[in-house]
Length: 191
Image (tube, rainbow, N blue to C red; front, top):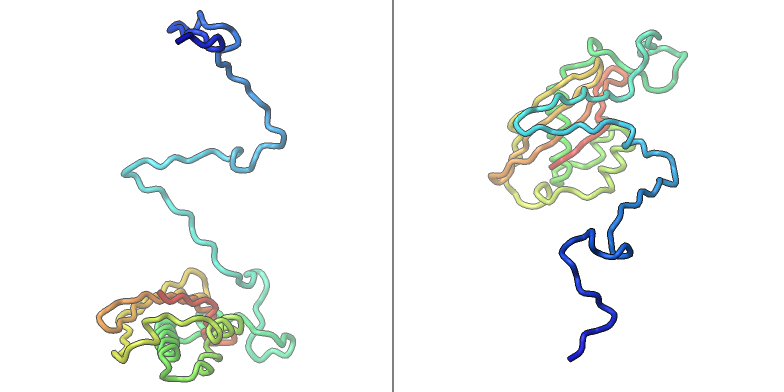
């Protein structure tokens, strides 16, 4: 056997290697401006230390410096935001909403009964969307075991509830906003 004339013997010393075989670093400039995330400092997570979460951004609400029109004013024909003092108990309204929604999904009441409790876009998605399988199947009774309410902004309530059926627990979350002196659901999620 003869050695190939194209392969040179390798030497353990990289300085002794021919110049065409040495590796070198070539820095290529970026063709465009720096990305937004490159300009912001990177925050590292330290194991065992909890970082503070930023406060949640509330939903759209009327400005405080402008007086809100009252129910019955003829100057405004659209929905009117309500303050917390003008609204009924949020926990009772949340429990009623969750119960009626799950009963409608189970087929025990018509879905049209939810129309006055939810916003028009949400009603459209509830009427045409898929229903959770655990709501539609089975004959076990549906129990709402706990309802918790948090009011992050005046006139807004976030409701979380636990629904139990057939030995299993399922989470339900809703956002209620005070409109025209009553609570109206604008977001609903059923787990």
